[in-house]
Image 1 (tube, rainbow, N blue to C red):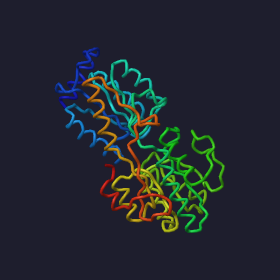
Image 2: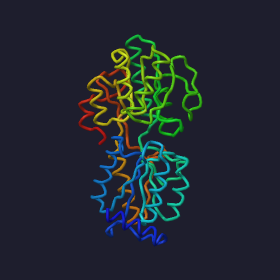
Image 3: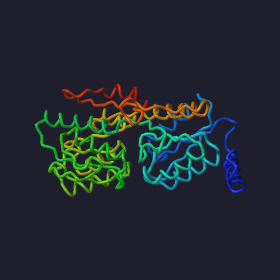
Image 4: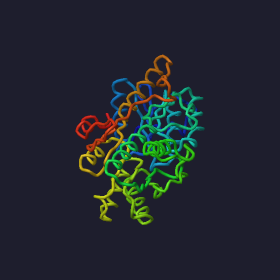
Length: 340
């Protein structure tokens, strides 16, 4: 508390002094996540803290109040500029609206790294460490397509997305799933413009369990014949399952998701989620902190994965119901490697 009061006083009294920092002489590195409640971002924070200790930097962490809270992230960047930070990692709540703040950070000679969610345009950040979100969606789409073909069932699909803002991670996962399942996309950069009769509808979840439950209830009211549910992430999937269970439909509906967190892998093992695409947020955060530490030391900036406009941190399909032609690991492997 005394440190926060001192920083606040410094910001009020000496706003132009970049050296006014909460640190102890170590380079200051920031981590700004979408929220501090989603297990994905909690895990990412743990990875960043571990890397900060190894790299000898002072990690300062911030988060939005809810998914979509751009204002809190803008304020976090202003704080880091005042601290004289060498750079920061950010999972942007609004990929476009955050860009002016990133520009201000660059003017302060900071390295800006996006994690998980690219900014728009992508080159507004110096680098992006992320899952290939389109591939993550495509993998669960391919698995679901193979499963429904094996079972001889016609799909009626509920699409549980993130929010109305059409952020890139939401769009890419949604569109990747549709391609994997064999449903033609409309505009590949937009959600919800397809006209395939297999799509029962879209709703938004805010990426949390309560939102997933409400969205699933809404779509079941619209079309009780839904038998396949795509979810933006595993908290939304857990909420969707609760709605299905309350409606007595949990045994008749397949749920697929993206995250690969330990609770989500448990839900695969327990039959709540049929298949999920595992991400590696610890790796994202560790590599990001290492990149800023290196930048602080010698000015070196990270380089993209060959053939991509970001640094790919990998994705792995997890399921206990393997399908022919779709490479996957089981939940036992997933439990050993969840969010590594």
